Image (cartoon, rainbow, N blue to C red; front, top):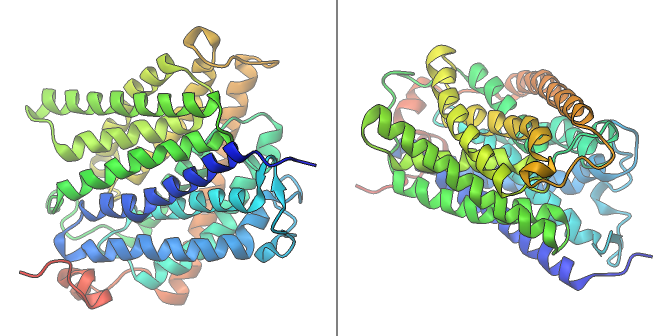
Length: 404
């Protein structure tokens, strides 16, 4: 019988609070500052509403799909509504209730990340319905594949804290919804600038702090792996921010606040899957590469491919998480300060990582499209042009974020 470790339990309880703090209020404020002032409350509503829907869905069925035995693709549903969990049930050396809550906060932030793809034009009822279905049919199965002992875990895929489970699923779905909802008026050349970069910076700082629980907590213990995960998380974010500053300084003569915090988020997303396996030098390299690649991707998505992924979910999260997954086989090497390959080889790990990326990308793309079509048929997807002009704060929620 597993024996309760109070130190590990205390750390995962703390990490749970930190990861929830990433969504409410961190991500909500980060996104709210980037939109027009007429839509600040709608973005906050989207994040808050998703948090509530995700919490209920995780309790009802999501956790049972993700973390019960079942088969390599899907859980056995034995923990619907946690009906078979006793107060003293254990998950390793921490209470199962604590593990459930920690994983719930990941389930909350993942669909909330997608909010950045469609602000200022999406129906609130679509957001809630789609998020409910998406957790059941995309997020929970992919979680089972990788963290629940499913088929990707069996072939050796490494994803410490969610490069595939969180960032690639969210980024891929963002592209689907951005295309299906259509662009904002004036996209791409006449979009109003972020109404409150200071609000965005405050949200980014909360995300950065919360990410210590996101990555450090994924060790599921208060140990050296958690400590190193936090260290490399911080280094990657710092380096990616510096890269963003350097690029903007060179190209425009002035680095922007929105740019520097976006760079930080790119570095944080990219280190996430590798954070438990690489050392400080690996973190520096991930920060350098992700800062440059994600910066270039932001322009490509909007200007070359003409997709209004409004707040750059795919370029920063989808691509960032994928970079971390694919750089991991190089940087896990002991020569870079990583944990090493164990009984495997570079080739084995790279093959598994590529299979993981392709499988999650294609599965998420197809299922998200189907779920979006179904949700659109039931409740519609885009508000009217008049509602867009007035702003969703008033037209969808009957309140205004600012009194002039």
